[in-house]
Amino acid sequence: MGVLLALTALVVPDYDAGIAFCVGALGFDLIEDTDMGGGKRWVVVGGKDGAKDGGRLLIAKAANGAQFAAIGNQTGGRVGFFVHTDDFAVAQARLVDAGVQFEEQPRHEAYGTVAVFSDPFGNRWDLIEPKEPA
Image (cartoon, rainbow, N blue to C red; front, side, top):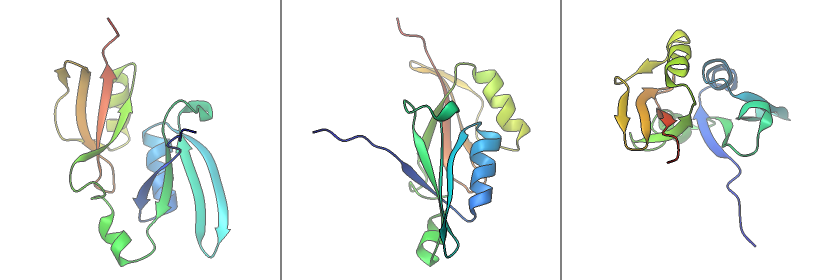
């Protein structure tokens, strides 16, 4: 029996701020937002129309000092999140219009066009337009 990676947690200071970034700026769908009681919610975002062939994020509100300290540094300063697009220029413009700051100009690598940006919480992401398969 194999396993499937279902969710990756994105630790944020506030559920609604996480949703605003993931849905508003990135264009993900809000797949689930369930009240768990006691101020906790189960918030899942992912590919358009809930597509299961793309990754999904669990928006996780920090609940203690250690979790708050990890916001924006979940991967020790490395790029930890990767989003693909079929139109780099359009996706980058949408992100910039949403207030996202890119750390660099787009560069062309063997695997496609890429640029690093930071989310409002300090995490680093790659926006990638993969090259077409040969």
